[in-house]
Amino acid sequence: MSDLTLGHISDLHLPFEPHLSWRQRFSKRQLSVWSWQKRHAVQSGDVLDALTQDLRAHAVDQVLITGDITNFSLPGEFRQAAEWLAALVPAERISLVPGNHDALVPVPAAEGLGLWSRWTRLQEGWPFVHRLGDVSLIGLNSALPTAPLLARGRLGTDQLARLEQALRAEGDAAQVRIVMLHHPAAAGAIGWRKALADGDDLRAVLRRTGAELVLHGHARSARLDTIAGPSGSIPCLCVPSSTALPNPQDEGARWHRLRLVGGAGERRIEVTVRRWSVSDQAFKTDSVYELSLPGIRAMTAGDNQHP
Image 1 (cartoon, one colour):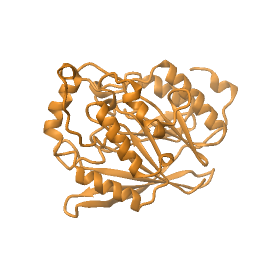
Image 2: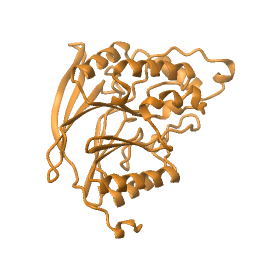
Image 3: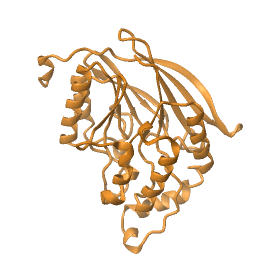
Image 4: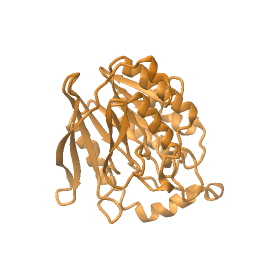
């Protein structure tokens, strides 16, 4: 396996002061404005600047962003986020998926997610597959507009079918498959109001086809869960907001440096937790640990049969 390093960040909520029209006020955006009035001091621009510097200092090969880059799904936010992404690292070194805040309300592609096409590099719809040597990043879009007070996600039958095809194809090619999405994939990882509506269907796909790792955001605290796969448990790793100051609801900004190590017989991932230190006003290494990844097995005709 190639010695590849990945930087996983999420839930950036880039600072943006909204100026809503009267029409925009009569939408879910207004609820987010009220929330932002309480949280704008938590989502720190200083931490965002330090995060940018820390990612560059650690020279990660690829930056993985699992959603909630914006707050209100306003066209100005999508443009601002595109400028921030363009200044971070070269476009081919970023892979991103959207979160629920990036889909509060329907937004035309030309004013919304279409502005981020350099970093999704979609070919024929979701999911994308970004190959980095013997690693395949498979990005899902779980974000969709929902009713007020809900932050649920959904993948849909078409995207799940394409995901299954992609996982099988990348598995047959002996690629290390890393699935990215915003909402937690493991059952019970988050409350019903914020959960993935078709999580059972996603877990069924993973149980049939396997994957080596699932990355997500959306939760307020870091998590490590597992999902059953065909050749062992699949680790599901969550990074909470990478820009939030520590507060009663958030444990504080962090990002994960992931280093893939080992050969075909023993695949592992070294996780370095870089956490915001209030006293040092900088990101510091909080812990380092290793995860064993499930082994890749060749697909057979029997694997195509649903249980």
